[in-house]
Length: 441
Image (cartoon, rainbow, N blue to C red; front, top):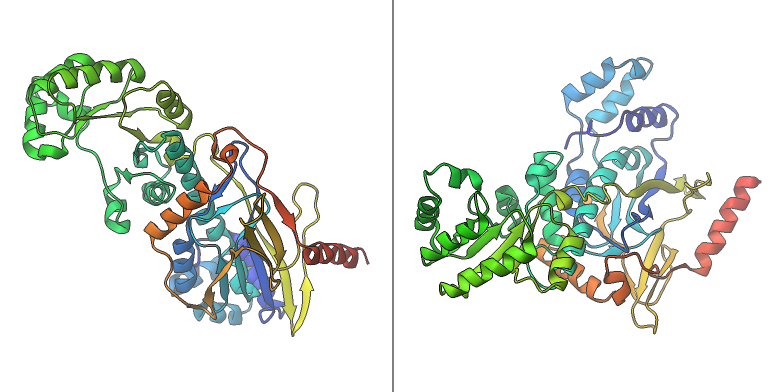
């Protein structure tokens, strides 16, 4: 895995740690969500397998090391540091919540405990990989909740910021509840159901719409989805219906979906296609989906692209990666940041999710404490080795669905609600006070 896929200051700090004799110090860093996006009641954590793969394969090639040596920032760095990079591997520990876990503001999703250079370098990759996929999975959960059990298909790779972002976004969307994706590579890589048949260009490539529909049906049979709005949506519906079966159904990509879906449903039913389904796509988001469902529009499934693949209403999240402990020769020092609006909490932590109470809650505790409920952060890598297989994508998807079902109804809605209770344990509160007091001293 490319060691240069990080910010320069991670590597200049690595050189500084090495030259200052700090390479043997063991640091503990936490990835946590400082604030949820303004329109979110929860975050669906995604991207853990990518983090595990990154840590297990992180290294520097000879060409990468030569590149670093030539940079002006490294002209005074000793050759011994570059020898260190040549043999660099992650030998530390990773604790993580299982993919599909819901987290709230102030809660850590990952903890890394390793020699300080090994813990520092991954910061950029971790923040990017987990934040992006978590945003997409969380957006997908909102869309699928709004659809009220009608399938939502992820259509967004062409609108994603890169093709790889589209592929990982498709994975995250499936984890968050989508029924499938249009991205064939995501289907191949991750076993996600793939969906889609033809675009407007197919229809336009034939001299008449009926011929285009007939030829498509001949190729795809019962998997055929006719796209109706290239010219006139209702006339397209009549032409598709007149061909008979077999077909899965039709897709509307523009116009008044409520009115058109009712008219198209009538055309299909009258022609004997009561089993044919109607899919709609085109600038959909969770709010439009909810509105169409509330109106009782006869729509069977929704295709969501731009709004989902970019998490358009919340394209960023205040995720942070901060040092919380430092072990120097067996002496532990707790660390925290106290700057206004950007503070962090000292000490490695555990989250206990207690659903057995009358009012369910999370308790943010010190690592090693005993608590009631499920302990969310679990050992994943110890001593640089994966200790057990990760949950499958299907298992992560099921965990997300069950976790959302356990939320109070208000938190499952699209509007912002009273936050899920997250309290600090007595031991953690005492550590916070002691750490701040020691800093002042």
